[in-house]
Length: 255
Image (cartoon, rainbow, N blue to C red; front, side, top):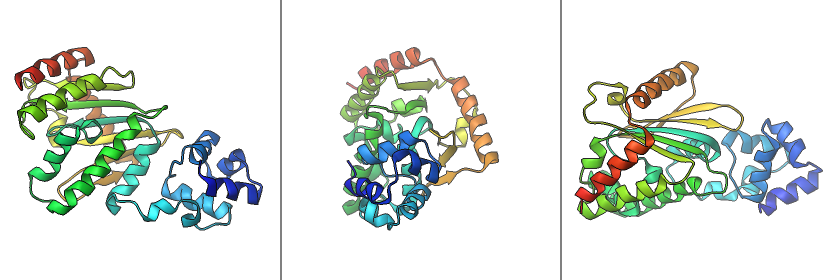
């Protein structure tokens, strides 16, 4: 329970329904802010705080103490509120599916993150995975290039553990993984990884990663281009069941 939000609602006479109408979200979204301690999107935080005659930090103090990089926070808010996530990766497994050992190897392997910062980044990545474990998780669909299954990130034991962990995750009804076979030639995925998120209020946002930081996309033309790329990579991929069988088979080669 977010007690600060509850007190502010009582003090102003607002209900979850009236605050939702003022902010422009579904009442169920406000209920989640209240009962599950969810942190709203920045624009919703400011609108709600204004309606309740409070500072944002009075209601959501944790936003000033978070450990994730500042540039990543807008996407993390979107990811947390999404009802569906579509992820394409060409070089490593999606962060939401990474084991601790695999994630540590990815973060530390290039030598670009100071050693003292790796554990902080690792903590952020692993905490994000809670979005797939909550009672109302988003529908998560990932398309990955088969090359990922054969890249020895972290060593043989780490790869076997990681691939079996993905196979286990695929038993959940809200998680689907599709593999683009190595036999496929040029396709849209060669242009780089991306994620597309759909929210409860029908907004669509995209995320693109690079060597410096990530970029959140919301321009309609950008979203249309990303959706076209998604249709292409999904069309080249194996079925979910075929992909699970392939990942299981490759996992055993790492024994």
